[in-house]
Length: 173
Image (cartoon, rainbow, N blue to C red; front, side, top):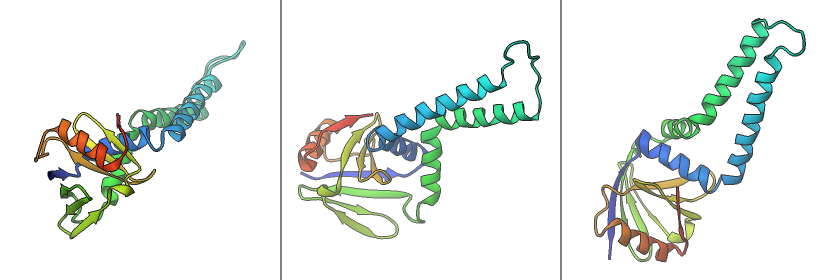
């Protein structure tokens, strides 16, 4: 049985891929970063509050502190979109879409640049979002496959196939 999938590496796909990496391979590091970020934001706000009989004043230092806290909060909220955008901009020309065929012994990917064969043993983790299957290769690398363009069977059949082929369970993201 062979499954085939066409995936466009657009902003939506790259955001989903960044989220999958963050919630699987980078899980511990991400949690530590989020806790640290929230602590810094709270400290920034506490530093600008008037304590005791001090009068509240908005000066240059207060504005800079609030701006830094706002930027940090924005980054924490839109982390996956930012990482997806950066990854898409760093992508080599000709890799914006891929057609992948999954076989029992590996999978074959074709792009405008060329074609590559991969073994399932290189997949560190499997993840799944609402619209995509994600093969996490390392903390910084992943491959994403759209469920919408999957042919050769249903998403449930592919899920069973890929779980068996890779030998790992799929983590829902």
